[in-house]
Amino acid sequence: LALTMAQGARAALKAGKFGLAARMFTEALALDPTQYDYLYGIGRAEELSGNSKAAQQQYRRLLKVAANHPAATRARGYLADLLVSDAGHALELRNGGLARELLDEALRLRPDDVDAMWMLARALHLQGHNDRAIRAYRGFLTSHARHVEAPQVKSYLAELLARSGTEL
Image (cartoon, rainbow, N blue to C red):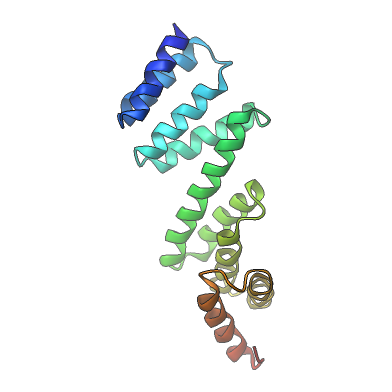
């Protein structure tokens, strides 16, 4: 029955019926809690429906109970993406503390996330950790000089350096 329920959930997911898919994956998981793909399916359905917080909760749950499962690898990437996106919104609101918290988690999940790197430098900047922000901006520019955000990062760095009386 769990397998049939999961097949229906996958069909619902492909059809764009994300709420139905989440409910069906939840029922399938209740019937067979060892099928971590169902837990991943819940997270994916929640994410695609726009419920970022619920998706993050399911991805974290999967990572906690089955960190080495193949579905956990996919969940880790999607969770990092959601955290970076939320951090971007926090930075738009100039909430460096929240952005830093989200980006720290994203970088633990995916240490080579380029966007998380420059955004973390920006969060440090907003929090007034100027020396660390300068190092982070420079590190980003050294390794990612051609990144689409590099001109903006240079601008942030120049702003900090001007305040400190140092040159770029």
